[in-house]
Image 1 (tube, helix red, strand yellow):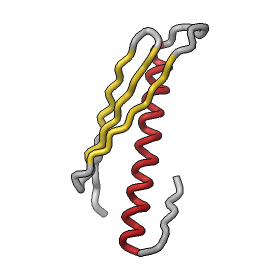
Image 2 (cartoon, one colour):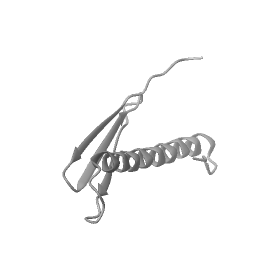
Image 3 (cartoon, helix red, strand yellow):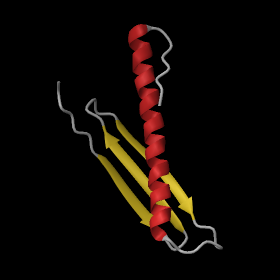
Length: 88
């Protein structure tokens, strides 16, 4: 069994009311996936910067997972010539 190590770079920018996360993954086949996630604090909510960062990061990583699933399904379909339905 081979051991692979993929790295996701996760950059977060935030202001007092918003957080923006950018996740980037460079795959061994040279595919580069970059996704974004955003969170905006309701003005009535207490300021908790970490919560906004976590929400933005989770949204970016969730989008990354969905894109990786679509990529894998496409590659399966190309190889098998049959519809693929990978489960999350």
